[in-house]
Amino acid sequence: MSQEFDEKTQNSAGEFEEKEHKNCGAGCGCQSPLADDGDEFSEEIQSECECESAQDDEITKLQNELSEITDKFYRASADFDNIKKRLEREKTTAVEYAAEKFAKDLLPIIDALEEAAKIDIEGNELADKIEEGVKQCINLFLSTFEKYGITPISTDEGYESESGKFYPIQLVEKEGAKTNDIVQVLQKGYLYKERILRPVMVILAK
Image (cartoon, rainbow, N blue to C red; front, side, top):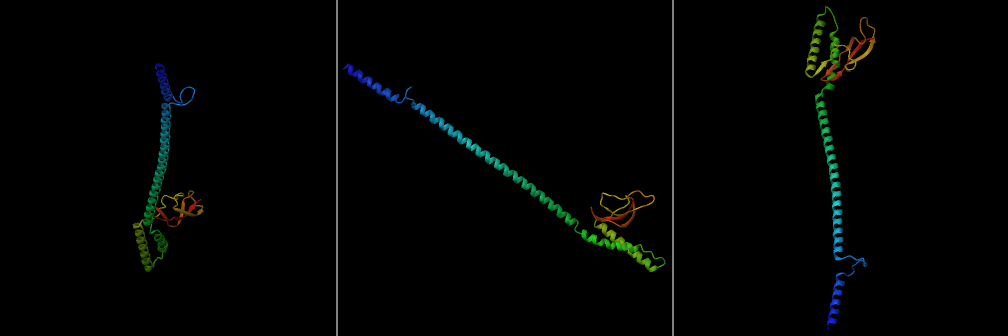
């Protein structure tokens, strides 16, 4: 009876040990339940890390795209402002110099009047009155010109080669004159505000 009880006890212990250590041990190469849980946890952590890394890459990509779009927007906005300012300047200039062509067309008229005023007929009362009337017309023209920003180009300071205000058509020998001294003014020049309406036509000394 005692022997039978011992055998049953040993068998039960063996079954319990087999259940607890089934497929375990140094020789079988199998992992315990604790080892399986550790591998699953490690794989879960690795999966989460990979997911976070992919999200970080996507965020970085979107930030770069946003930065590029923002830069293009600011550039386009700056270009638009520059174009707008340029058009406003051109519009202002066009309005300011709207009468330029008309003023230029009037210059031959005042040229003709000034040439007529140079004619000297002594002893002719009628001619003197005509001359006086012509000079009055010239003065009226000049005062009206000045009112609208049209002024004669002065030759008091001599020839200025780089200003564009003078148009030399001939060089002549002139005793006592220095090189580029104005020998004769053939046609008066005019400014329209800050623009050269017509340069002064001159003859210069060699």
